[in-house]
Length: 200
Image (cartoon, rainbow, N blue to C red; front, side, top):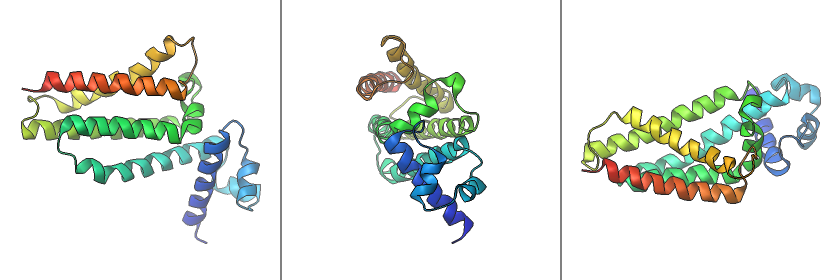
């Protein structure tokens, strides 16, 4: 088996383990055992759990983005497209809650290996929002604007709602699944207000 294929097998096994048991309760030995692989071989591909976690997170983000792209391109109405992105973001959180809880729980404690993955994810989301907004400008749904600036503001607003909910929930470090539903509802209302304000 080629090294690239073996690396992918390890990442997929890690995603399953992390998704079911959480990262804190998963050891490198568990993943090696799942693959009938020696720990030494596992460490050859990934020097520690943080590197494996970062690769697993990057893998599921890319998979989710690639899966959503065709459906998103088929949507012409900008509000519908923005709501679609919000729904896919929430589906991602639900599907990979245990992986995200570890990675995003306390920003100051986010492993340094994971920070570039979140930076990349943020850049992808801004581009996604900017493309939707540009489509709206081109089709006359929106006034002319700096689409990158508005996309940044939109993402900051969406992200900020998570912290507002946390502030009101007793200082927890990561929202519960029920709280994420509340966050999604608020995000959709905010996007509706934004779209109305940008429309001629």
